[in-house]
Figure 1 (cartoon, helix red, strand yellow):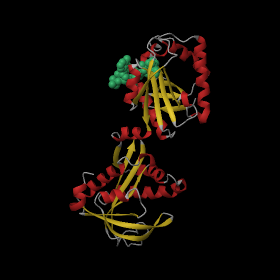
Figure 2 (cartoon, protein in one colour; figure 1 turned 180 degrees about the vertical axis):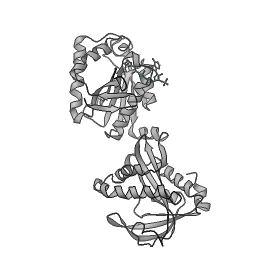
Figure 3 (cartoon, helix red, strand yellow; figure 1 turned 45 degrees about the vertical axis):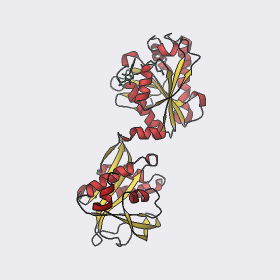
Figure 4 (tube, helix red, strand yellow; figure 1 turned 30 degrees about the horizontal axis):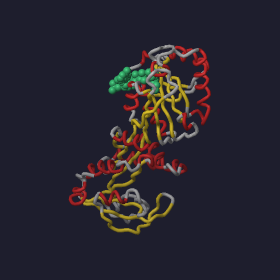
Length: 364
Ligand SMILES: CC(C)(COP(=O)(O)OP(=O)(O)OC[C@H]1O[C@@H](n2cnc3c(N)ncnc32)[C@H](O)[C@@H]1OP(=O)(O)O)[C@@H](O)C(=O)NCCC(=O)NCCS
C-alpha cells in the first residue's frame, strides 16, 4: 500500500475500500463528531459517501493531494485521517491548499495532529510548491485552532458555516503563506560544518536550475568536503538544514597561489590569502538572512586567522555582491575573466579588513 508520508510516530497511507470500517468506527464517536455534526454519529450512507470521496481524491494530480489514513508506525493501529488538498472553494487551484484532520479520541492530546500537520505543511511548501495553506474549523473547536497556531497558521477571518446543525454556526479560517512558513522555520534551522556524506545533497542544491550539472558536481563536492575533513584549519564549509533537507551552504578556505591549483580557473592570478567562497541558498529560502548567517559563521571561523579576507565573485552577482559590500567588503579589482564551470564570466575581487569595517559591521 502506498505510503504518502512518514513522521516520527505515524504513517499516512492511501485509503482502500476496506477502510470503511475505520471511518464507521471513527465517526460513531459523539466526542469526535462534536464540532462536525454537533455530536451526531455519521449514518451508514454518510460513511459510504466519505470513503468514496476519499478513494476518488488522490487519483488526481498523481496522488499528491487528497485524504490519507493515519496509523501508528509501531503497532499499525488506526489513528484517524488527514487531508491535504485544494480548498473546496477553489478546487482546481493547487497553489492554495487546505489541511484537515480527524483522530480517534484515544490519540488526542499526544501532539500527533501537530506532528503530522507540520509534515504536511512542509510537503505542501517544499515539494508541492504551494503558496498558501489554509485550515478551517468551528469557532468553538479550540483544540483544532491550537493545532493550527502551533503549526504557524494565523487567524484570518470568522464566517458562518450554515450546514453545521448545532446552534453556534461560527467558523474560523486560518492561513499560512509560503514566505511566513519559512520565516516561522528560521529559528529551527540547523547550521553545521560539512561532512563527506553531504556531497550529494550539495551537488543537488548547486545544480538546481541546471540538473545536467549534477553528475559533474558530485565529485567536486566530494573532493571539497574531503579536504575540509582533512585540512580543517585551512578549509571549511558551513551548511544550513531544514530538518534533514540541505537548503544552503557556504565555504571558506586559504588559497596559496604558489602551490594550489588555480581557483575559479583564474590561472593562479588571484592573490594568496583567506577567501569566502562557494555560497548558495535554495531559491525558496533566499532573502531571509540565511546567507548572512552562514557568512557570520565563516567570519567567526576566520577571525583568528587573518585580518584581511577576500571574496571573488561574478560582477553580475546581484544577490551576494550587495551583501558583501554591506558587510564592509571593498572592491579591490574587477574585470577578471574566469570560468564557472561552463561559461566564461567577469569576476570582481573584494577585500575586507577584519579590524576595520568588518569588525564594525559584524553585528550583521
Ligand atoms: C482537533 C484534534 C485533531 C486535535 O488533535 P490532537 O492530536 O489532540 O492535537 P495535539 O495533541 O497536536 O494538540 C495540539 C494543541 O492543542 C491542545 N489541545 C488539545 N485538545 C484541546 C482541548 N480540548 N482544549 C484546548 N486545547 C486542546 C493541546 O494541548 C496542544 O497544545 P499544547 O501543546 O500547547 O498543549 C482532535 O481533537 C480531533 O480529532 N477532534 C475531533 C475531530 C475534529 O474536531 N477535527 C477538526 C475539525 S476542523
